[in-house]
Amino acid sequence: MTLGEIRDILDALVLTHRVDMSRDIWRAYCADLMSDVLAFSVTQSLLITGLTNAQVIRTADVADIRAIVFVQNKRPDIETIAMAESKDIPLLATGLSMFDTCGRLYEKGLRSQHGRIL
Amino acid sequence: MNRGTDGVFFLTGKDFTNAGSASSNLKGILEKMGIPPEIIRRASIAAFEAEMNTIIYAVAGMMHYSITPEVIKVILQDMGPGIPDINQAMQEGYSTAPDYIREMGFGSGMGLPNIKKNADKLTITSAVGEGTTLEFLIYLESVSQTS
Image (cartoon, rainbow over all chains, first blue to last red):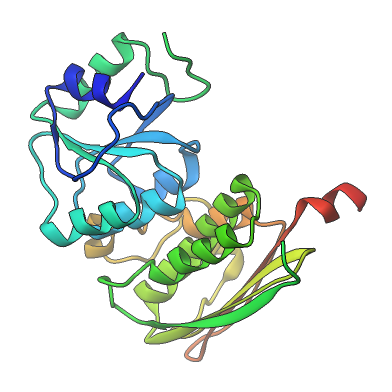
């Protein structure tokens, strides 16, 4: 699944500039607890979260997260967006709830681990 | 990969604006050295967990790193409250973090167990009222294949 497809599925807004929407995403992980992202996410995942602070970007960076979706219309501040751009982590924002975000992506074939593009 | 490198980052307690930047810089150094991505991920996650612990609990600290063709060694020394019972602190879910740390997405008692999971060797020494020293090693592939 490409980042562009994820944006369309979630009716999401892209918050970062110069984003390659053809970037492939194979897996997803969903949490508000960054400790869980660090402990349980797999490399190259899409991160779905309701947390918007700078630590989310740092966590995503060290955990090799490929892109982040903020749910429920939550938006990080401009410094946090700039940090994500500097680390080449695209940010998306959707008005959907976390449950619906995960549900839609699951329905379209995204999985937590070992997922393949369907 | 070149012969190796070492260095140090200084950490300031409660500086959540820059929390994680040392680990992020370390990650960049490992990438430049051509270390395999999965090893970089383990080292970065372990360093980040340890860095966050220092920022959350200590007044100040240092992250030393040394990278050779054989091993990545990271040492975090802090001036903090110390850990009274290290075995207890190593248990998943045990945490003394205040609520504002939990609201940031941390402090769930997974940090030290996660460092242990990602590192090949973890050593913690601590003195209450003085500070904690945490050292972890991650062996590079060339070593793990021969040992």
